[in-house]
Length: 416
Ligand SMILES: [Zn+2]
Image 1 (cartoon, rainbow, N blue to C red):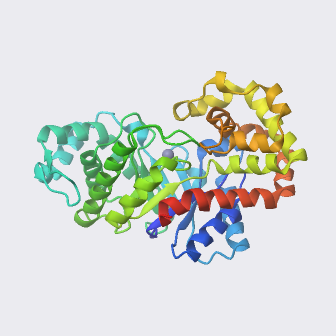
Image 2 (cartoon, helix red, strand yellow; image 1 turned 90 degrees about the vertical axis):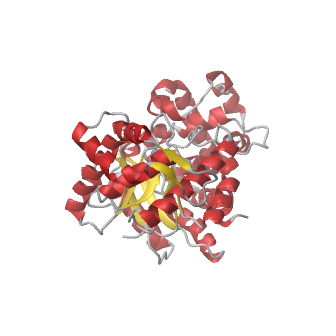
Image 3 (cartoon, protein in one colour; image 1 turned 30 degrees about the vertical axis):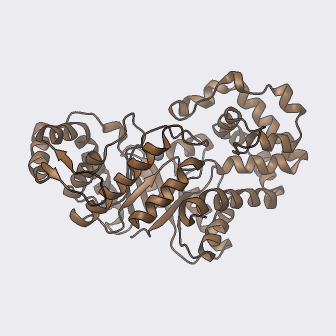
């Protein structure tokens, strides 16, 4: 299966917003840009919300029928490993092989020797079209990359073969993710990782590197935008080179995780994609639930009370909710409004505090991040939450579609 040039990770915690998200993609289509939807939901989210991959498949199929979506779409087993891939095998056709945990583990010496021999061709002065300068690749650097990444590559290959044995080699799209680790990969490391994946015959179509700077959940990028832009362009040059020189799929492209709300990166990303005529997979999804909350709060009445109740419980269970996301959020407790304050707010004020709009004086990123990880509370409310979603559906759908189209798809893929 081949992924098209542009694709976007969508979906949502509760499996209710697929149609609204497709609405945004249909607006892109009307503007002449085809973007393939990929429903993604990680094992962590399934466990917290108590859903299964089959629920995601059902939500995707339903949305596709509801919106008459006639083009390709996928369901992604997001961030899986050998130990939890089982329940995703039947229903998914896109697998994000998360091998970040294997980064830095020492390879077995025989494997390292094979890697060094195979990739010795890169040692010396390496010219990659699109890079400002040649790369100097030394044997020592090659060894160092092998020592850092070879076990992760081997793990990806093992996982790929496991899935291919169950589904057949052409029944799914393969992504390899290395984003949930501490150190960004340099362009040379990226190249050698791709070369090692090619040597293992892993038909990787999307690779999610760790980029420089912080990609916190649901808020803007924290870091040096210029530096990100330079690295992103270098990565695109490397990916193009790898596609042409290493026998990897022609559809190979970068995948950007935690991609929602990185508003300051979208303009440089779009510019780079145009410059390299490159594709992109952008994972969003997690913040869709915040659009649900914004819609509920804006609707007033029970929608507003529900949002306030969720915040009250999120405050009370701060540590428990933040713990699974500790490395990807930055919340200062002192900057959170008290529940007494929030109870006094009307729905509009709640929505304005939550909505990611830096120009709005009410916007509070701490409030937003806490609610972002607070979806467990809504999950525990069960019917009360789901009935509210049904009751206020038009208002919520408008927020979900508008946010995806206007603030994400347009700047990244369309450039307007
Ligand atoms: Zn990720």
